[in-house]
Length: 337
Image (tube, rainbow, N blue to C red; front, side, top):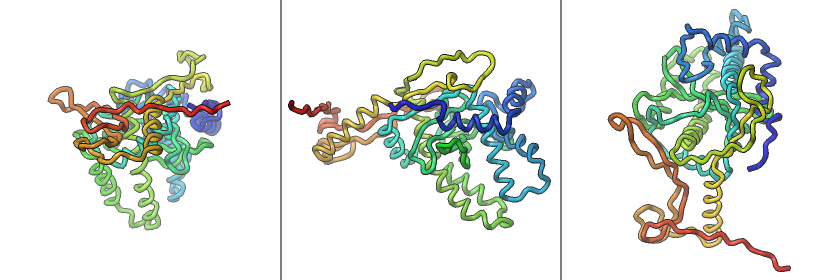
């Protein structure tokens, strides 16, 4: 894993810029969170996006904001909510590049999303990824949609300079449902709203849903991996600051995690073998000849009425005609003196 400069990382840049521009927000919201009369579900999120937007609206003080001004207010509020949540744990997850690519490829497949299937280790995490164009990483958290009273997955791409871009969200189902159906339903609900007074939004809406599908699918696969029974996550830095008392927002508070080092090694091993020997014929679990079994999820039910789901991520492997995994040797060429 490449060593990252925590101080100049995108999330720390975003947090530093927000504290300069909105110095009172984070202390103010910490007080709001402690209010016993707070209306949102604190088991889901630390700072709901709706409250961040409310703060930004009050700060702007505009009676009749333009379309562009409304968009900027919403982005500001969402960014503040995300950063307020992320700074409570300050976790950065760095994926092995080959594992990242496999998760991205796996995300093209449809899957069933069930309640409790997706989990996040803290209020909000930051994941480095370069597979989504124009961003260096993603803030990921669960939000409590106060208006609809539903839990949603909230994803915010971030540029290397620390600018938080337009966020994507997905309302999570109360019952197991295919991801494709959830995405189609959310887009249909949005398009059913009256946007006739702003026809200039049409191309932006189409681009938004196209980009959101890629981000949401990848994020769901990533969260499934992080919550899988065989996940591979290792903290790579020793914190020199104990997270007690006042938060100072320094690099010493940031925890960096490496994700999938050994899994990535296995994937590279398979890829090298295929490059050198060609891909074996066949390609499914009943194939009578040697073949590559692609990376996939194994989902199994548990809990009351087997209504809950756990997942196991299985990396690509080469299997022989009897269905047994082959041990691919790694040969390192040694130069003669």
